[in-house]
Image 1 (tube, rainbow, N blue to C red):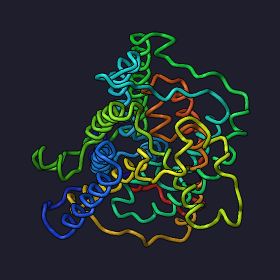
Image 2: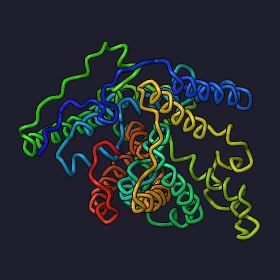
Image 3: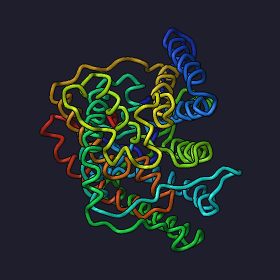
Length: 414
């Protein structure tokens, strides 16, 4: 068995002879600037700010190869826990930043609120389905965005499946809300900021120590990997990053998102809207005659006008575009910008099927790894923990299904 590192440097981005010039960097910069100009003109300064945050998120995700899918799979299959520990670091920093602001209800004069959702079958089933889908599609909602930006075209069928699955879920959304569920539980309101913070930090530490213990038991001979020999400033720009750099960056940028739009970062919220827009743009409404406007999902506060407004006005769409283009820029900086599309047909099938599961699961479970897991836990909502347990169980099943689609366990793919 090959020895694997305990202190991980993003394996997707091995050290290279970096150069900041060249055609790829020029094209990536022009594309990012063109998108910025369009968003500024048609969306305004507020949307431009969110796009810039999305760009930074894309750079962080790509350079750190910060994924939830591979981190969970590495732990289940190989006993490697560095990815899970990085997620615990991200959450620990997140709750330290979010809890005081959410308790006050404002951040530097801006009203803020978290994602506090009910506890019910929709979360359990949706997160479980999502967990299966993320392993079949080789990425979660944010993962597929930065994979696409990095040139992995296998993310396209996964994202298309995500759109279709999300749109399908909006049709069933009202039924899921009628199932038995418990009222939302905010640990901040129930325990107070200090106790809620201590409890969460204890749980993060316990999970991190557990992964470390199991890692030593399962992989006692592994050795630490040396960092690439380049200055930290150069590495910050060109990558690869250690996982913990990515964890810190994602926590800080999520906190900036809270300040800018009054709620945590979300990714999956855009996919139902993209699916509904595609349904209209493709003219399918003339054949199927679905009364989408009257579905319960679209009649919720804040979504009533989403179907008629341009996509540039949707904050999640703008940030998602920023993530994709940020990953393109990061790939160009790392001299790794290339298109990767030659895959067996079974992999494409798995991507589509996994995408459908991602979309349906995320929509009924109030979000994905970012909105429900990350956003829910840093909001102090108990549903974030319920989502984590159900999604991890689904991910375990998804890992067992991967061989049927001839998907290898490859630490560089998720």
